[in-house]
Picture (tube, helix red, strand yellow):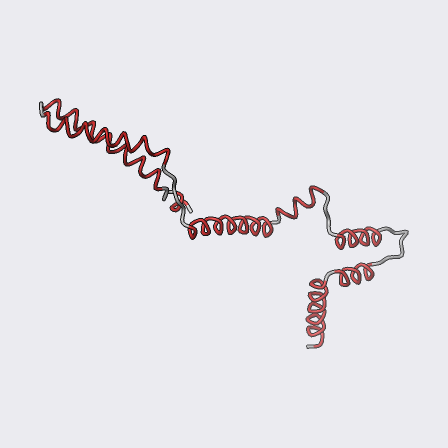
Length: 157
């Protein structure tokens, strides 16, 4: 993207015209020092042409090819997706959700059941908590079944 940003033809024209003016001015100074009116005259004409180019630059419009514009927007979209992916995988989105108090209903109900389980005056126990967790989270349920199968196989062999 940085290379594509440096491909502005109007900026290149302006930079080249400035460089030409600098070189022409050096020739004028050298011609005056050497007493060569032909060099001074030619360099002065070059200075005038470069000045005319720089005067016309505000009227020049840079045409961006459609494919380059599309590539630019794809690059921006890819960068946004990459940032979102990094934030999601790093847990930053979870931290933001917790900070604003937006907690998933499954997690809230599991936490409430866990609090009830720890309360001595409530009848809920650890089996109810595990059953609720398995019912609400299919990944946990699959992991639980795999762990139970491994434990059962260990005990029989």
